[in-house]
Amino acid sequence: MPDEASPGPAVAIDREACLGTGLCIVYAPRTFAHDDETKAVLQDPPHDDPDDVRTAVEACPMGALAL
Amino acid sequence: MTDTAPLLDPARVRELFDLRGSYMARVGGGYEGDPYPLWNRLRERAPVHEGSLHDLSDFPGDYFFQGLPEPDRPHFTAFGYAACNDVYRDAELFASNPEPIDLSRPSPTNTLLNMGGQQHRRYRALVQPRFAPKQVEWWIRKSIDGVVHALIDHLQDAGRAELNVDFCAAIPVLTITGAFGIPVDQALDLRAANDPMTTVGIIAPLVAARREEPGDDLLTVLVQAELTEEDGTVHRLSDPEIYSFCMLLLAAGSGTTWKQMGITLTALLQRPEVLEQVRADRALLRPAIEEALRWQPTDPCFARFVMRDTEFHGVRVPEGAVMHINLGAANRDPAKFDRPDEFDIHRPPRPMFSFGGGPHICLGMHVAAPRCSPASARCSTGSRACDWTLTRRPRGTSASTSAAPRPSPSSSTAEGAPDMAQYQQIDASLFGPDHVRRYRETDGEVGYLWNGVPILLLTTTGRKSGEPRTTPLIFTPHGSDFLVVASQGGAPTHPNWYLNLLERPDAEIQVKADRFPVRARTAGDDERTRLWDVVRGPWPNYDVYQERTDRVIPVVVLTPAGRTPRG
Ligand code: HEM
Ligand code: SF4
Image (cartoon, rainbow over all chains, first blue to last red; front, side):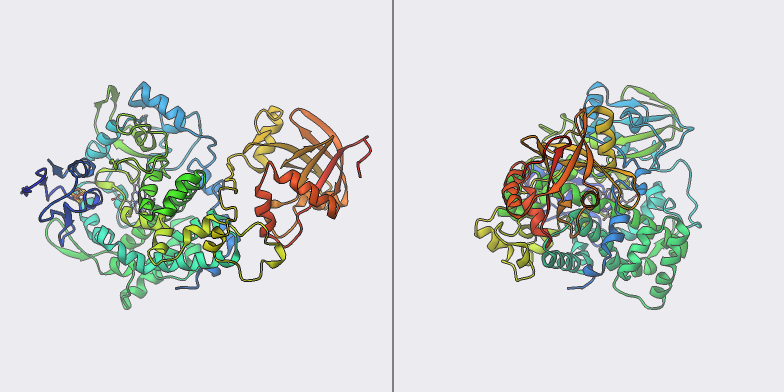
C-alpha cells in the first residue's frame, strides 16, 4: 500500500517492489529511512530539497518510488 | 589497530594485482587508451548498437565476463542512459542468466548475480540487511578502519608507496580478511585461487568452524541466515550455497574496490586544485568518490540475456541475444549530465549506473564508498591520511637522514615544502616492452613524447645473458650528449641497464628514427651536482625518487661514438 507524505512532494512507496537497496536514502537521507525489514519508509516529517527527493525517486533501481 | 599491513608480501600483492597481468587480460585489461571519445560518438549515433562492446570498440578477442564470450549468440550493446535504464528495469525481458541456475554446485555463477525473479529476491533479502547503509558502521568497525590505519601507518613509516599495490590492492584483501575472519595469507590465497575447487578448499573449513562456533563476521551471518521458501518452509543455506556466495563476494567486492580506489586517487592527483579543495573540506570527499564512480566506473560493461524478441530503442533484438550495458557511456550521456566528460566534484547528484541498476544493483554499494574513501575513515578519527598521501618530505632532506624522525606530514606542508603539485602523476599506459615495441614500430611517433618528456631507447648488452636489452628512458639533451638517469623510480637498487653499462659502456640508442652507437660514463660528484639541475628541470620527479633511496642516483652521460667525450 502506498504511503502518503504530508509536506513537500508526496512520495508513494511500493513496499512489494522495494528491495531495500537504500539508494533512496543516499540521495534523500531526511526523507527516506529503512524499517526493520530494510524496506524504505518515509521519515516523519520528510524534508529534503525537492530536487533531491526527485533524484531519489528516479534512482530507485526497482521503480518502487513515485511522486 | 591491527598489524596486518606489514605482513602483506608486496611482491605477491604486486603479482596478484597486476593491472596488465594475465588475469586482467581475460577481462580486457590489455586495452590501451581512452575509450570514451569513441563511446561518445557511438552513443550519439544510436542508443543501441549491434555488436559486443569490445568489437564495437575495435578490440577484438575472446573475453570472459558477464555475457561473454557466448560466441553462438547475437550481441548488442546499449550506450544511452535511457536504454541502459530500460535494460536494468525490465529484469524479466533482460535476465541475468538465460536459464535457471543449479544451486547444488558451488560456483561463482550460481549466485545472486545470476538468479532471477522471486528466487533472487529471497536470497537478496537474506543478506541485504547486512549491506544496508546503516550497517556500514559495522563494516567500518569490523574491517575497514583498522586496515586503513595500519596501512597508512606502515606507509608513513616507509615514507613512500606504490599506491596501486601498497594501498589500493591491499585494502580489499585485508577487508576480506575481516569480513571472513581469516588471516592475511589466506586472503591472498583466495585471491590467487583460480578455480572454484581451490577456493572451496580454503572456505570449507572456515564455514565448518563458524557452524561450530559463531563469530562476528559475514560467514557467521551466512551460516545463521534463514531462508523462507515460497511455500513458507524455512531452511538454512547449504554449504555449496555459502561457498558460491563467498566466491561472488570475493569476485564482486575486491577487484572493484581496488580499481575504483586507484581511479579516484588518480583523478585527484592529476588535479591538484581539486585535491586541494578536498583536503580543505573533507565533506567534498564523498562527492569526489561519487564523481570518480560516474566518470570512470571500474567495470564499465555488464550484460543481460534477452528472453523474447523485442524492438528495443529502434533495434530489433532477437530472443537469446546478449544485451551489453555500457554503463560507462550511460554515465556520460549529455541528456543526463552537463559537460559529461569533465571530472567535476561539484555536480549535483544524479542517478548513475556505476553500481548497476534494477534488482541486481550492487549489494556492496554502501560498503564500497567508505572503502573507497580510506581517507574519510582516517579523517573521521582526526588523522591525516590525505596529507600524507599527497605531500612529500621537504626537498632539502638528504637521503641519509631518511631514518631519522621525519617532520610530520602537516609540518612539511607548513614549511612550504613542495608537495604533490611538484610530483607529476605519470600516465603509465605506455610502459616497458610495450613502449619499446610501439616506439620501434613508429620511429617514436608513438612513445617519443611520454608524459611531456622525450624518450630514447637504450640498448645495452645483458651482463649475464650477453643479449641486447632495450629500455625506454627519459633523456635530456646536453650539448651533443644525452643525459639519462639511473633512478628506477627511486628503487633501492640500480637498474639493470645501468649495471650492464658499468660492465660494457658501449651501447646503442634510438632517438625517434635515428639509431646510433654511444659510449656511456657516470657523471662524477661535482659534475653530477651540476647535471642534476639539468635533468630535474624537465622531470622534477627525480627529486622525489632521490629521496626514496639511500643510493646516490647516477646521472649517465651518453656520448655518440666517434666523438671525444667531454670532461
Ligand atoms: C566501487 C566498488 C564497486 C563497484 C563499482 C561495484 C559494481 C557493481 C555492479 C555494476 C554490479 C551489478 C552487476 C550487474 O548488473 O549484473 C554489482 C553487483 C554486485 N556487487 Fe558490487 N561493486 C563494487 C563493490 C562491491 C563490494 C565491496 C561488494 C561486497 C562486499 C559487492 C558485492 C556485489 C554483489 C554481491 C553483487 C550482485 C548483486 C545481485 O546480483 O543482486 N560489490 N556491483
Ligand atoms: S531505492 Fe527503491 S528499492 Fe532501494 S530502498 Fe529505496 S525504495 Fe527500496
